[in-house]
Image (tube, rainbow, N blue to C red; front, side, top):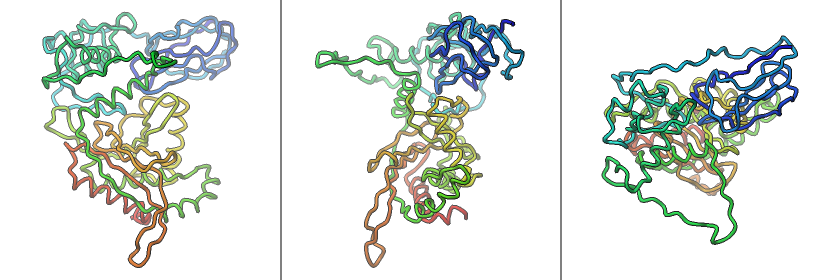
Length: 432
């Protein structure tokens, strides 16, 4: 029998995470791969499995704690010498981080990106904002510079007073909501919605938003304020596509893969991006350059109990329908089970939001900046379509393309949507 300390493994890109659930009680027996704790980052939740078989002596963290790679989680009394391999991590050491020199426009492409904002604290010195005496990681310093926040004005809530991204978010929200604080560089402020005591009208519950819900709300707000949205509407005749898709049911069962209309739509988006590279761009933070991408990664919005998540399917232009369908099913399952890693939601070029299984005639999706566009798909409907001689019933798919008008003109959007309609209406074009 031996005592082993389990530590936080590689978090897949997240700098710090919150402990949201302790899976066992003191003295419980545990097997290899059983869950010890559940952690939550800005974008996903993840289980930390036990690398040993034995008994839980005690937890070294509590629910609500913020931890990072290498922090001790639990003490186990090990009854077997066997264990599963865990990423090797070194005990983190606090180091002084000097401000990096950025000589070219940089975009941090994530599923929930932080766009450039006007300065929040105009009187703060640049040295104070990024000084080496501040305990904060490089990604937090970059976020502070992009938002114009002086780090010496931010109180750190992480271990040993470390400043984390939530602290920057909280500081910015306080500055925006303050009636006496600094004004935005635009010279105007957004009026706040007055507080209302809803309990005076009836029984209410006050429920705390999850971390993912809070981040999604903040991201949507930033995108709506910063991106000049235009939405282009069209319908695609998917009658033949649906007939072909249904004919694949038996083959799909033998392959263990279920093909949904989403797989064809994602493939059509990839081909339309290849034909219209203007949509596959991002505006640089300086506003004077754009980044043209040579890769084709498509994000798909997934509705989960924890909130909206957007995993990314990579290199869609190089994949066939069966492979895309397998990726769609795998990432959707991981999203709903809280198994996505932060890296699973980074690097998107364009997003798809489909409400086809729910209903509706249409909606206007919000661009997920720094992407240039997003396609919203609603429920297909049988409609009478004139073929030149008579009206015939055709299955029509309503679509809405929202795009960033700083990068994409109306003609660009029209050509992109026309291509998608062509690919979906006659799937033979998908192989050309």
